[in-house]
Figure 1 (spheres, rainbow, N blue to C red):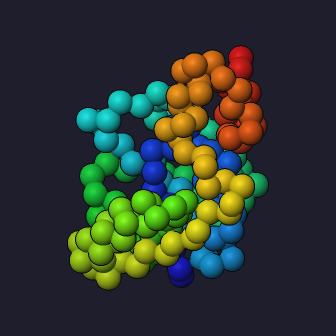
Figure 2: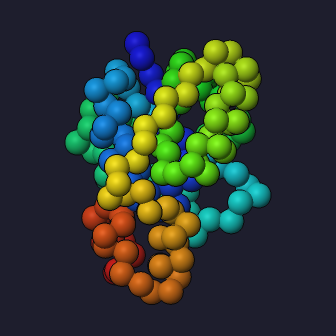
Length: 155
C-alpha cells in the first residue's frame, strides 16, 4: 500500500493545501494529513481546532486520514508505515528549503521518499503565515481558506 504523509502546522489549512492533497490522491492509496505538534511554536489556533477543520475539509475523501504527531516527521512516517512525504512548492525558496529537508528525511526515515507537487498558479501566493496576518488584522480570508475555516472565523 502506498501511504503518503502530508505534514504541516495547518494554522490554518488553506485552499492551497486542499488543492495539493486533491491533486495527489490519484498517486497514493492513502494520504495522512498530519499536524506536527511543536511545543516551542506559537500557533494561532488550537490543535483541536486545526484537527476539526481538517476532518471537515476531507470528510468526503475516503483515502484521506487526519492525524497529529510530535517529534520528527520521518519517525512518524516510519511508525505508521508511510514511505512517502507529500510537499508543496510555491517558489524557488520553498524548493531550496524542502530539498535539504527531503535529503535529511531520506536518511533519517530509512529511504523515505519526498514527492513534490508544484502549486497551481492561483495558489502560489497563499501561505498560512499570510492568512494568519489577515485574520489578526480582521481582513477577509474567504479566498484563501476552505469554507469550514471561514465559518469558524467569521462567527
